[in-house]
Image (tube, helix red, strand yellow):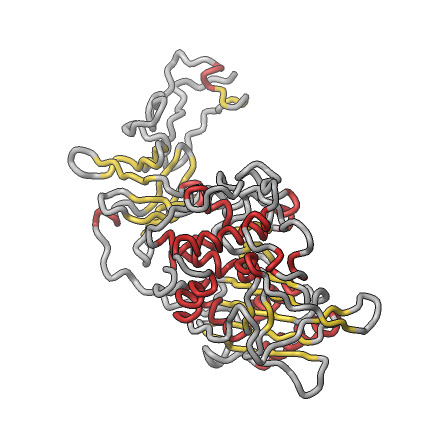
Length: 496
């Protein structure tokens, strides 16, 4: 644990420095700069460089490549939150004639629109954007490679379309909208479409020799919303805080949480890797924790932003080389080092200020058939329902204000939990998307679909046959489950 909420222990700081030093040395990066965020602020900064006396700091710009896509996604979510579009709208509604208009805005955000990964040649990252002045030049004659919505296929042209969508709806250039609606409110003064001194130069390091070649710096033109931005570790640290907690000047906490929810079907290899994609954010499971963020690369630069919301830790890593250090692994390791060495101190438990008797009445044990569940009233005003033990379907529910509750995640997301009351007002059972939850297993008085033969604690008819007593191919013996008076009581001792 730390002696201060704002200070990392010396051993933790040394472990962080060691990790980036190994990455810079083994990855042969001309320079590498990093930052760690905890508790809403940067708590550690480090850098390594091949040039003596010129170590970069948190104010030096690097090109961040596809982390730009996350900024573009924020702009699109703002349009949605303002009611100017719906994520289920087809692109054709706003940008007719692209040849990719049947794809929805959500599908473009999640890279499931079926578009090609790159624009037609020449290689757009190393050629001037002026070669692709129109959307048709970015998309080519046949934009769709796959059926729309069927698979996750990363697409840079897809985010070009989203940038054009922002421009169409706002009536202003993408760069101007981004600066006005995101960069300025969040105080990201060192994030820009064009490099601003001090900034790093981009280099290609020879794979078989310790030699370097300068990479060209091209303006991406129409492709800018997919990868144009330059930024610093200090600015990206602030951006990480926003992506974890939201900021009502830009996007609410609920909307940034939506960005972090997987929205794309994963490829088989991605399933094995524990990786998927949300709305403008990469999502992965690594070292037993859920991470979100984005990586980026352009000739001469690598970038990574990694966030663990549960641990309240984020990491930013930037390097000025075309290839070499695996920054996604470095970012995940920086998060892990802090999370494991100095785990998050939870807020003190505090009781609810008040709880309605009608809500408290729902708390406790329920049964779906024979499966025991527990419903708990939590301090955030929600209720949670999940198996009493082990794995299974579980979810939190938010009150609708009419006595019903709406599921927030998992199998029950969007499903309505409805307490059904008896004429005198007490709760008979819970109805959850047609599932009946009762206080006792298959409670006789509850409207269990198919009925309950003999009732809870009743007896099986003396005319029962061996087939009646068979469940799943096995014969039920004479045992009565202790404590619940279960419904299979044998009137006569009899063996089959």
